[in-house]
Length: 445
Image (cartoon, rainbow, N blue to C red; front, side):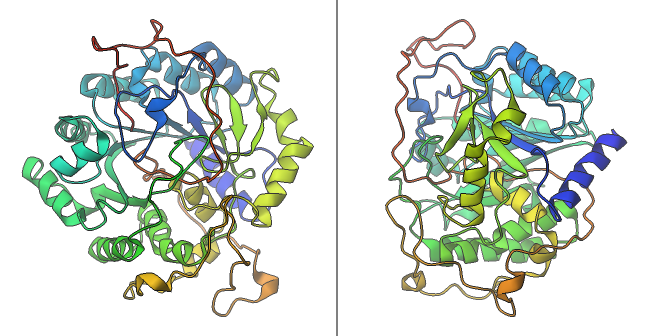
């Protein structure tokens, strides 16, 4: 595993000085099936069929084994009865894999425990599991649309905490939006009623977004209550203390730069999507990220030829759009973490008005265009010259504990383009479990 750890560290450092030949991190959506009815996410409305199979997953990673970081997600992953086979296919075929992380609602406690233990037994450099909790019990259940989901999520988290393996970590992920921005302390207190030694560092905060092609939640009010969200983040950062550990560094930098994202409506750092990272949906469509709905192509249709799509004019054109800030713009952890790691020196020295009081709501001056673009170019930072605007240098960052701690589907990222509805007729094949009333069992993570 040391070689794989070095491989991830090398990929991160290399991304600071040049665009990698192929991405080292992939957000891999294994299913859209979900039985939760989250108000801020409409994945559960997708009539998903003909999703990726373990055999296809194995073939893909055998052909392209250089991914060192796989963020596996859904839907609710445990909707798949063959999830363990799919994860085993990744572990067996992706020979460079060091970091594997996935979010879940915690609805399927026994299945979650079994998968984590089997994954660790098969061998992985580092495994991270996020349990999505959006507030104290009543609020969480209301937002998630499924009574009892808070109790199940917290119980699964409690059980996962009992796994004492040096290469495993579990956290609670909370996405801040209008309804829960001022409920962080209540959430911590509620968790401590069940888990008295729950630590502040076990709670990872991120911000809500919209996405057309992924969450299908365009129109959900994520552009509200920025002041309350920033106050919650600032208070959380103060209580967490200084960011010395690599994982804390990532979380702290992500949260510190939320303010700049809100002010400008753009990524606070030069985005590395379609350079260091990419997004693959359950039908093998290749995208830049979870937010922007511009598709590069379909891997299944192209015999899983990632390099062919990566070297295509389409990918190069879309990457140029990212560089020139013509994409939909976001600050989702799925993309923000690789972006921070691809701009280490700049991320380390940027204080982003650290922990200063949030301005009045009217201070947010950026104007969103109909397709997610923001008028004007991002302003230069203090003491930043135009010639240094896109330059990055490298500082050391240990890869030992790197993980994508915010990547829960509680995080609801943004594309404002209309989602193209899936035409496939819904069916519930034997691959998925179904409840007696017709819902497929599981939950949006």
